[in-house]
Image 1 (cartoon, rainbow, N blue to C red):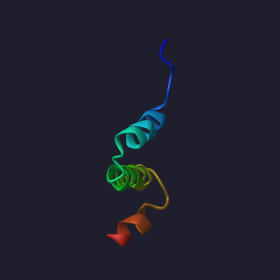
Image 2: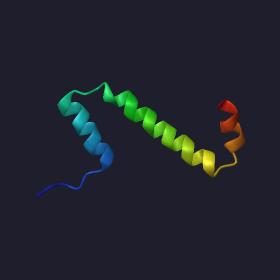
Image 3: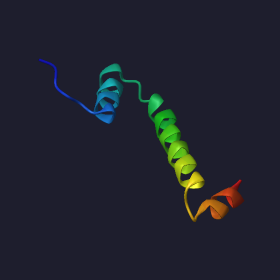
Length: 53
């Protein structure tokens, strides 16, 4: 029977087994951009985030 695993756990196992470490920076940047978009839409920090760009 298959285990219930999180998406991050599956991605980590994929990187380990396939030795695709070059994908790690891409995944990290996608996560950071997603967090930035979420905080940029509904936060009091929005004016400061927009000032960076």
